[in-house]
Length: 112
Length: 113
Image 1 (cartoon, each protein chain N blue to C red):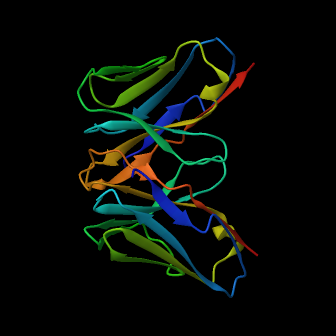
Image 2 (cartoon, helix red, strand yellow; image 1 turned 135 degrees about the vertical axis):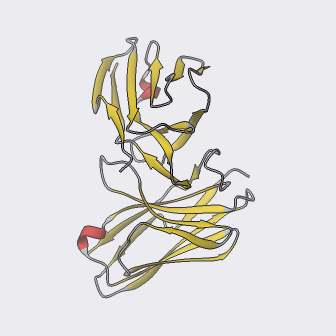
């Protein structure tokens, strides 16, 4: 069946270092969404990518959607302690658009 | 108002109890979702309601019973749960296109004893 994978599972960085998480789908995605969940919190929508090769920026965050629409990445420049949390990519199931599949997430720790 | 409100925030129930989780949104979203999330895992889809009709049931045990009384409300009725059902239960809403962001509630932290 359709699977969404993310690497790495965990990442510990020194404050000020960069961070990247990668998301890979076993099938082509119509779009991909990224969510952030702080410890003890709930997922919060960050961004949606729709077009092949799309790149979007939000301040220190850069999101990319692969040309084949099967992979995506989130890059954070100069991490801050406020970036701590788990970052999930999510995409709709091919056969049922109202069913969104979440990747396993990348947990980011930032050492001050 | 871009909030999804869930009650209660915490719930402890015995295996013979019956309880309900409630979720409310006033964003005009016509899709509402129940997710279950275990520690250090991603949200796992349980049910989807689209235009107040159950469109997806991810083979969830019958001890979980969803209900969508109207376009703003979503309930999850719980009966005879097992300790392994302890988890964070998240409600979310969006437009039912697969192309819109989902707004999540803060969740109900459920403990079954």
